[in-house]
Image (cartoon, rainbow, N blue to C red):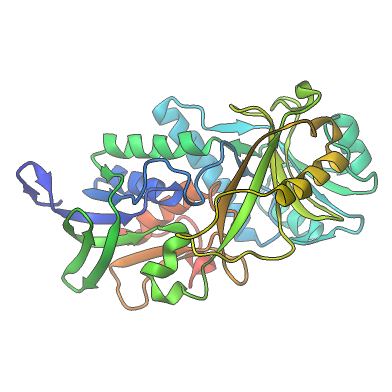
Length: 383
């Protein structure tokens, strides 16, 4: 355990850089294992400057990118339930999830047949529907009648701000020292341990865990061309028939349509149902200089989608926000040991799918840090 100086600790078993979705989960799982943990966050906890915010974040067990990603989602689902039981908070809202493809089942993010294979390999229930059947069951939808749809009933959405806050609160109850508004300047590592320097002080530890999201390439040189931040815009529209967009009657969705790939969630906590898209033209950004103002053109694109496929939801715009997604070239997660330092573990590039899996990724980081046998296949996420 870390040595204590004047009642405070300047020497830790593990130091976590970043306390967003992944970092807060890592701090929780490490401290729960009895480690003396320090977590440092540049902004507040939680905050809206990166990828770990947005009122609702999808948790879908339907994945076309590979079986290990279904296993990650399944393990995350179990861990969110455990965290709810431990904390008494409601973090996960089970609405079911609608995943739609054009007739033929070939979309922007994989084929329907691949998603079915992943669900069946993990013994997860699902239904195959047409667009017409989907629209009849959930009248807020108006998908093309011949769309191919998979409905997975255990999926839904998380409350991101509350999820991060709960991970941090529970980490603190297990003894973690979590500090906001403390920007890390640099870090070093050798066989004797790790050293972290911030704008407020310096700390030493046995292990370092780097979970800084869109800033990953600033801290791990090997991620410079791998973890690339992009700007995305989300919109909330107040439905003309709000009763059709409540969580009890409106599953979360991710659909391939003529206009591209879109995803969204029901009304929760703030006015309006939420949705966003994958732009046809990537907007690569510097996370420190990104424009956080949204434009009338961005609103027009999103509104056009809602008017066509969710017409009863396309009422007045109530909210728009710009956020960051950090993409990898193959859209696979990176969770690995540093190639030059056995006592440094890092993450990067969750490609828009990291929040729902953050509970499981936090556990994996704790397992790698403590040399446990990982619950997940770590090779699937190697740099």
